[in-house]
Image 1 (cartoon, one colour):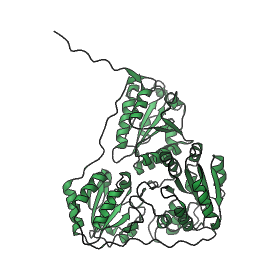
Image 2: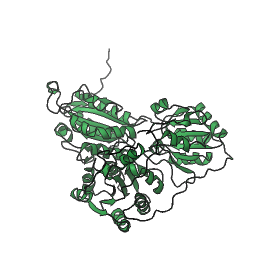
Image 3: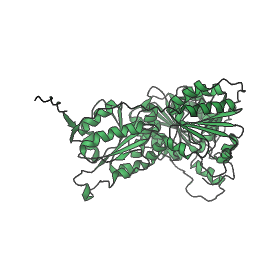
Image 4: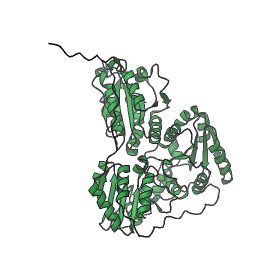
Length: 544
């Protein structure tokens, strides 16, 4: 009796080799890291075709990977140093979770043989450390399981809603033998329920004054153009969801109405005239303060299109349609009837602010908007000045703007570096408050070493402006820790290898912006502004 021929045994490779081959197959060309002893076997004899991006502190490393991943729409790969490095990075891991940014985060672990002895640099229950702010977290049971774990981490990170994942790898695993893991193709678009979409189209048909509320999910999905076509066909007013971390609609469009507050009362007031509110790519709604949200009292019909089942589950009112943006908006566009309703009137931009000394923040932001190249990308972390930015710096739409969705500082500066790494053909502008800048100032060194086309504007009001604003709203006095005098950002930036200048008078601003935005490499412009900050919410609003 003849036997079937046996298959040839697959040649074994090292865990490191199998992992690098996966990165190549996934299109990952950069690894962001701050190395330590537990990562050395992974980093030894590093290949020329994968760029190792060195950051000087782990929070900066994760922030750079976050900005890069958002700009490229592929997972950022991060290599951290043991449990201590993960601890340093946790704030920006949380921000990546709220940003819904795909990251594959690895961290070194001590050798398997001495982990039970609580060895130096070991991490007990390493996979639990970053939870619950990662979608998947594991320390593989065997060395040969590491490549498969990293592959799974990539697939999970990239599946909507995207987010960070985590794999802990013992130091001695990288040199062990395993079988190569083949990269697989997994679709990521989720189609909508046709009946639900027909109900939404019917609601538009019945509406007299519809509104679209667009959130960051639209820009993440590259669906800004589709959203604009839906807006124009429905003649709906366009609002931006509270705390939207990206620009999902051209802000000079004639139907653009403005930005919704994160106060329940103020948001409800803004939407009061609309009988239909359709939230696309955002929660319903993100609030920052307490208060009564009359929008949920039943007079307004609410629909939501989201790729996040959790966002659908927590919505307090209305109908949620779980789908990714492109198939949902494409189907809606086909189902929508033509309408005879009047076109809504969009917002009117304010007149140019007057120059003054000390420099008003609105004068700075208006001047910056006029000076920036047309294809420049803005990365912002100046929370106290965001309302002013909304008024005086209208964004163009797709891929033009990034900020953090978490409320935690330390993302903006390294994220600007990551965006500049992704788009070296464009100018990236980082708009950073003085308090925010000090959280991850080390990222300037990485940008300077690589001569990235990055201009950082530090708005220096010598304090935590957002907290000053909230102290006024809450009517509390004698709050310590709000002032930040004596920080010299010019010297700090120069010490990290950047061109830097300070602007203290309005007459100096335009020449400094022109020079800094044209600089071949990294420039920092520290602008001393009036310490007065706008109120983020109306007086009498409940506490944050």
